[in-house]
Image (tube, rainbow, N blue to C red; front, side):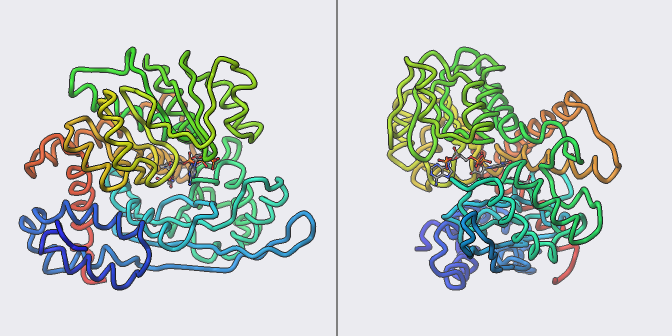
Amino acid sequence: MTNGIDEKVRGAYEEVLRRSTGEVEFHQAVREVLESLGPVLAKYPEFREGKIIERICEPERQIIFRVPWQDDRGEVQINRGFRVQYNSALGPYKGGLRFHPSVYLGIVKFLGFEQIFKNALTGLPIGGGKGGSDFDPKGKSDSEVMRFCQSFMTELMRYIGEYTDVPAGDIGVGGREIGYMFGQYKRLTSRYEAGVLTGKGLGYGGSLVRTEATGYGTTYFVREMLAVRKDSFEGKTCIVSGSGNVAIYTIEKIHELGGKVVACSDSNGVIHDEKGIDLDLVKRLKERERRRIKDYTDYRKHAKYVAGGNIWDIPCQVAMPSATQNEINGKDAATLVKNGCIAVGEGANMPTTPEGVKIFLASGIAYGPGKAANAGGVATSALEMQQNASRDSWTFEHTEQRLAEIMKNIHRNCWETAEEFGAKGNYVVGANIAGFIRVAKAMVAHGLI
Ligand code: NDP
Ligand code: 2IT
């Protein structure tokens, strides 16, 4: 179980397996980072002496709570809420909330762990955390979602604050949910503390570009990876899985940069539109009407819908997984490479299984792992915090410019770090090491806490 892990970090991984039985996604995320860190410990003995890896794997605080609420029929429902405050070496805990029936502690911990290094890569003052609930927003009325969010925040409010922990959205949590949670926080605390949540509406402290940021940022990251290869999005056939927030703004930016997205999906099936995805239609169906992607073919008759289809079977040159974890397995990765895919940019968190990652790396294609590629979302959240702290609001152009620069810097940092540690072109090694070193140095400076 610990094969392939440097003996210097093996003990830490064994401890994670022992302490967190059954949390398979968490084990996967930890292992993937630890596999990169052997050479770092060789270079920085102080990290080893201070047991930085062992400490970084153990969350600073984990909160699990009951969320009772009443549905529209008056029936009482009980969900479980989570917030894992993982690491605050670089700033207040920062990371999204996920509402999805699959959420359990192992998912929140994997996401929180990834978030530590992602946030470090942004270069901004944010620690790592994540939260959520096994609440399923699908099929719920607006009032049910509001009552759930109010109950969730009634407990969560004790643990968050602009200097403590700043949640945002993730799967199943967008502007509507953030609005209800912000309202309840304000009501419970009697404080207009804008910086306590990000992803807020533009009318009450939200930042321009935050909605678009993850998708735009991931696309910028891929643009940088292509530029290294003297290539661009121009004329490329692309595939973007999912059809939620990240997928939509990935498609938008790819189209702006001259690529053509021919497929997207949701958890029920895949849309293949050879003429190019009609993004206005996807926005209408998903953002405004909250419908299923299947309905796309009601308006674009030539497009094909395959229920339960595998989007990675469709040939493309650029693949941008933007739905969920482990959506690309080894077989899918092999299919993508065989079909001529030259770049993969992960909008989702950990969308590729370890077998898939191995195949991408061995093939020599440009592979941008989530913690680097999708960091634009949380980076723009940090820009929202800056605007809130200075009671200011920036223009779209200025904010997008900042985002583009941040993504460029992350790309450069990952590239140079990989090269420094003898793994030229390997963004996995570059991202893990660059993110880790920034956090580890701060932890050493703070002493044994
Ligand atoms: P949304 O809820 O807006 O959209 C999620 C999309 O992924 C939907 O199309 C959904 O389909 C699909 N999906 C979700 N879960 C599954 C599943 N188990 N199997 C198949 N499809 C699934 O979420 P986001 O767009 O915000 O998030 C997408 C990914 O991006 C996640 O991995 C998230 O962690 C990551 N991410 C998000 C950021 C953000 O700022 N929002 C920032 C960085 C990363 P369906 O509607 O059928 O469930
Ligand atoms: O995974 C992520 O980076 C997010 N869901 C965004 C987190 C944030 O605080 O904006």
